[in-house]
Image (cartoon, rainbow, N blue to C red; front, side, top):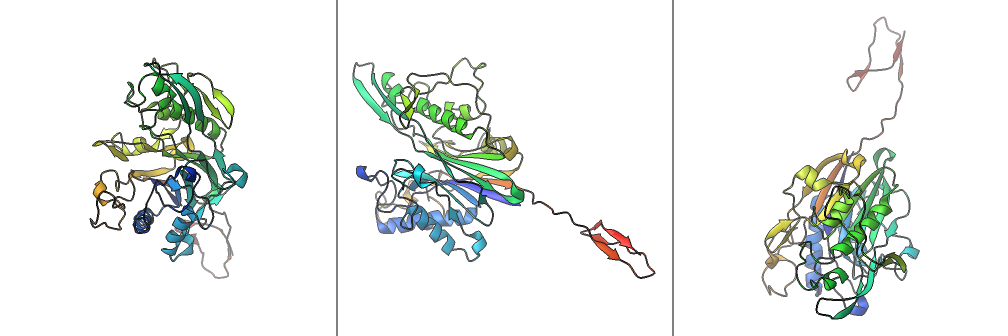
Length: 396
């Protein structure tokens, strides 16, 4: 049975969210823009036709029927007459949510939706807490600054798919390159490109990658790690999750300083990481080194990745970055702030700024053995066949 998965970015917006005190709104600002944005996102998702979606940048306003995720699923399901194609959402336990309602404390969150006809949650979903950074430091000009930095929590769900096999999917959205963290401040690179050209907060993303990798250790069956890691394939966070060899590399990969999770200290000072976790980057493995999902200042690359463990990699049929967003003009996005009355389409193109990554997996259904006995009362010998192969015992 083919299982089709996708990781994509979406920003449906409602009224309140986990970051409402700061007045944050990362998506549409007007009702008509919201309607167009949702239509474009839904049309993209219907075209992809995935059985499981990992979503990034969903408005973090809860899992109830007044939330953005519910609204997205309702809109999708209303467009599909066959109920076997309908979607349901993965909902973490209430005690793992912020204020009992939100996934983490940011205005946006990651999410998972799936087709119950194709996949069944094997157990409760887990929230993977990401590190915070709380530390004060002095920059080269002698200025002291307190740094209180946060990352979005990740979401992990194990499914049972065809034949009773287990497929665990972790959806992630790491700290952006545009932020400034302690390491950038003390290096005098808080507002400019760091010397290693990996963007700001690189060490903070390394800390997140290490936490994520350790959280997935010991999972039985197939494992997929999806999301916007805000790191290119050969940058430190992705090497931590894939093929980093600590002994063979002269340049060592280090964590961020001043990190903790829910008040429990991780690293007071920077620390060298060990070997990578050994996941395979599916896009570069199956689509080649030219794979990309994002464009910045005219340059192409992948910040969005699908990583797999050894067993799931063997089941991969195809991987594709569907280029409906990264190479599209911003003039045709849903908002009218800069484009006024310019006519916008409701098709899948420019539905977001990152391209969806689509993975097709082949799960073989379990064939139940059976025996068939035919009693032949004629004078003629009978050789029965089923599906072209001889079977059963013939009794005279």
